[in-house]
Image (cartoon, rainbow, N blue to C red; front, side, top):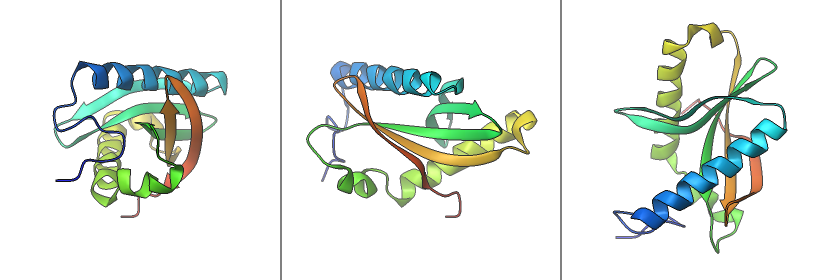
Length: 131
């Protein structure tokens, strides 16, 4: 069985969890520095999770944070494949159903790559909700 790039095996472990928290903190700090308000971190429901939900100027961004070690951004499509994108989109619909005040806002799906606790690259509108 092949693991996704940057994964630490099927169970992950405490190092992976710590790296995930640090990466999400770095991504949130980047967004806040750009003027985004962080509405939620690790928004979950039984069907999936979104790492960060952020808002700015009528845009609601659902952000996937990927800890990336040793692989270039060309492998991003493999790490966030169709099933992962579908779960993120479905989770965003649940968030919007629970927070109707954002129903008229423009929605987009971003990806932030982090390494060693630093945000390296950001892909705005990395994929669409039209799956």
